[in-house]
Image 1 (cartoon, one colour):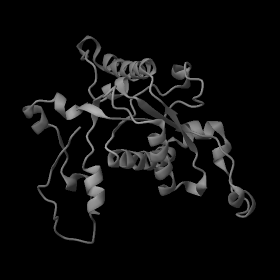
Image 2 (spheres, rainbow, N blue to C red; image 1 turned 180 degrees about the vertical axis):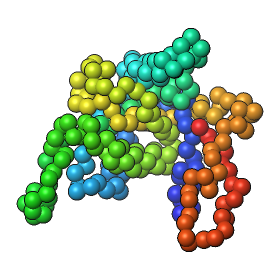
Image 3 (cartoon, rainbow, N blue to C red; image 1 turned 135 degrees about the vertical axis):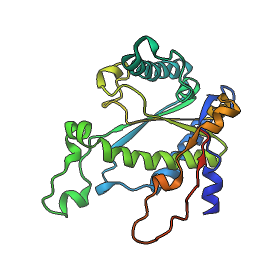
Image 4 (cartoon, rainbow, N blue to C red; image 1 turned 60 degrees about the vertical axis):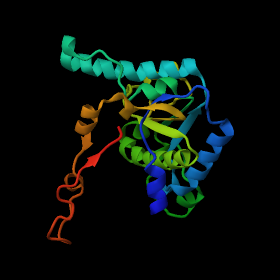
Length: 238
């Protein structure tokens, strides 16, 4: 337990990655190789794939512009001329990321057990439309578990990692990336941060940038009468 706290306690949302200190492909392969066996998947489908994009400044910048443009459009559509026209601190890590992992759904057939042993049971994962429209929620859960494992092994090695889910949710917007058969579910970056998002905030802003109290998120029923977490709050590093 203390080891997990030590590892994930190092997590801070990256803002700028170093362009000199960069994980090697061998290190990234080792990270994902260790992470993959530690997660599970419904029916062993693993109905997703992770597209691992290596160091390419121009491509990272283009991916960042897609995400930033999507965020700005949402603000413009909601606030018009009053929308804030600044770069989002939370997405800047993509712009300098040496390694970018794009997770998408994956159409797949069942393994031998589910195909030949379990009998007649509908297998949705071979249907593109189902995977694109109906499996996004459960797929995101499985991808999130793997992404957290990947982050843990990256942190253990002294690297940093960040996530992004703010991007266009239509395949047409990703036409310049033909290897993506679906629009993304998650974008994850890995590198060595030279600046973190919390360092973009002054002391007053940091004090205001708190997470909800624990009891607001975790609701205990029946097992206890008194709330042991009353008054607890968490200051975040995002």
